[in-house]
Length: 192
Image (cartoon, rainbow, N blue to C red; front, side, top):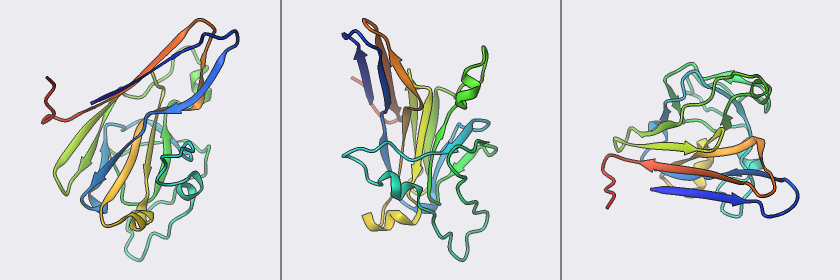
């Protein structure tokens, strides 16, 4: 399944875009949700872009959450703008999270810097399903997990993720175009 975006600037001035192609993935259980493939990547807490299709508003996504009595290994989200590195091979999405995986904006000013992998996987351990998410044309990956806030939407759990340009807006010059895409793959998807 692919979603592509083409922006053509037919005007006389630069166009600045802050955008994302976000998908919501449903999981069987809250404690079975994870992401794989972002080990060694830098990330920071960041609110989602506001949208009329949002499930969690930027304010809700950034609220702190009580981890509960048995939250072993729980680490509260860092303040927006504080960068850290993903040390573990899996990002467990049991608790609330709203953040951007990316090369920090200051790093992008260097001649050489590490970029994110072009693909990563969502893992639903309850259903034993995974989906590969492939990004093209975007520099960032947005990832959100509602934690206990998901309870207001029912018993199923969900995450929101996808390629984005949130930290450093895209600039499309006059008479130029920009292309970005997200591809979601699963071994059982048939393309005809």
